[in-house]
Figure 1 (tube, rainbow, N blue to C red):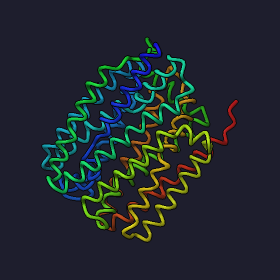
Figure 2: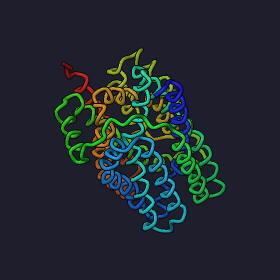
Figure 3: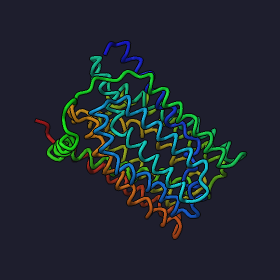
Length: 389
């Protein structure tokens, strides 16, 4: 791949990431799903359906990426995402809600492992592999930029036009993702003739027999599962402290800080090191959340939102470490194996946290999620202690 095509791929990936995460409904997802399904348990079950579907399709889509190509996999993911959002628009009860969630899970499975591999392979072919941390941070910052804009948009629309309008507004960016992906240049495939299930067995074995990679994978699994549950339940916690329109502004401010964290992640990591970022950052941010949930007040959402300033650097640190451990021939499938485990754990705990919200409080559910996410620091510490031969 020529340097010009690599730069074009990077620019298109940044645009793709922006549209992918331009989700005005996401700020209120748990509230919208609870309204459609009739309870927070049903609302949380919609997230669980997404993750269980992702579990089922995670490895097959990773194999598709390695055997067929990154670009086509991204096109398919965007198409399923748009179809899922259309189902949400017309959902009147849990039935169509869960169908939309399932389509969203398939979409996420196509993206999982593939999009990071698309970037890594693009840089490798252009001789820029050492720039992965910096470029990954910049491209990932677009998720947060989109989140900030869509949070403000969603908050204003929800307060004036209602939840249904917010869902409709989310459909069009997903359609745009399809067209952006079609413009990309597919990196060279590393696998041409291997049987899919043999490819899967090799990928799983490579993770299991690599102590550093195994510990990194477990750390990513716990951080994703509990962190994502806490992220989705946060709106239910904030709802009783702030007015509806202000929830969108809080999420927007959080996304802006996270965008800066991603954009400058490479510099931050070089300055402080991966150990301080991963272990210190995770423990510090989650400890702050514990305090402000315990003493919940009007300032709690604001202070908790400020923690997002660490999110990008933590995510890029873990991603950079794990990409260096993956093999080129199994990169997307190995990523999918770890993502599968995280999705399964999320699916298991999310319904339980929804029930805790219904029966106890959103505060209690959020507290358990924060404590669970903090345990990932232990696994990252183990990974960094492994001596690489």
